[in-house]
Image 1 (tube, each protein chain N blue to C red):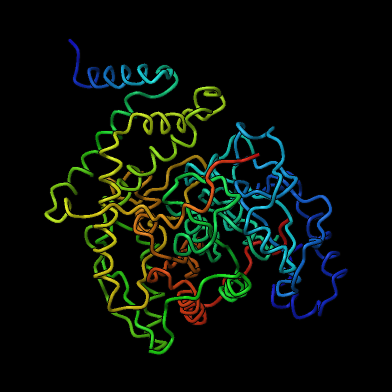
Image 2 (tube, chains in turn cyan, blue):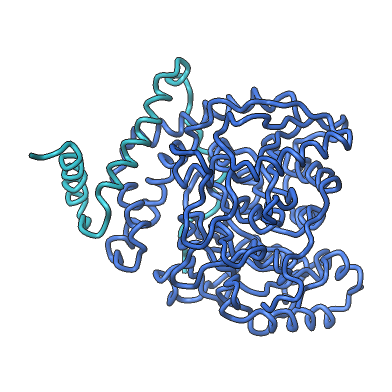
Length: 71
Length: 443
């Protein structure tokens, strides 16, 4: 019988393959668990009354610095 | 060999440039190219000299190093990873390196770090794991662990790192040195191979706050928005509202707060509610930002990544745009929430890290905290202030009952970096400057 965990891992595997990445080099269960935990935390913020009117904080003052190597 | 204190060196050199270069050569020779047993350095400058572009002498005598994700012209920026270990050398100094050299400081080399700055343990299979100067069997944390360690061992006066979730403050606390993460944008990230676009900050380590002020004042920075014209009001975390803390760490933290009270600081206890999931908000921002930086490399060179880091990058590729955007909204909510807490105060105090430095290879943990992940144990006090963009500094709070260093974190108001440093120095005057851990040790 296929468990919920197996179904979730398989779903993550399918999405990884669709991105052109190799699913065999990472821990699928770890990815599925973290994804679910972090989404739950963000969902909790979505329930807060003032959330929908809140503008995102991007800290645009950082944009003058490069983040990838040039050389 | 321990480098003499910065103010002593600066007082002695009196414009004598050859004396400074001789001190730099002697000190560099003492630091083994592999970082010695402590693994604090990845590369050491062969023949350290004053810059030809030296403009003023304000930092003449200062010896510094940088985390190996900060460019130094002519040196490979490895980012602590096999991925870049054989890259071409950087063609230009990072902004901070250029600024310090122009003021008379000399760069002695590049510090070890957690691979790609994507972790806070300080474990590095490629360049060796950094060792704690107070207990060789323990780690120093990260990701800027080598920089903190170089300062703790007195190999340099000043070291620079990057801090996206606590990567300067965590190793500062565990090495018994000072680590400062300014307001985002205060120090340019030009020439820094960052980890997360909107969370990264350049940070500075020193043995004492006065040296940070010397460096800060030597840089051409916008004027501070803080005010000096009133008595200082401090809030302090009075409970475990931000999560559980190791009792030995909490005991030392409480003793530090009590010392400040006895020194007549105006202190008020506060709870900091609603920040338990701040680490999750940070992750929801960080995953896609990290993945976007590594998008091409992770496809062409997947085998060169640590599998744990690769999993993190995959997660970033899978992450939805909605989750990313809503995490940025959550940052605004948290920023507003903390403003309500800090607004009666100039600074709010917390412990820097909830746990003692762990034994090498073991996770940081707080006994009895069954729900806490290693990430939340390491970062529960630091990452919230990357998420909301407030400046913060960790100063040594002395040793706990096991003889391990504990950090006291001071969180300031945005764009009040200079004021925060000034208050930190007053706190340091009461708590004292940590002695060197390495008298008699070979580096």
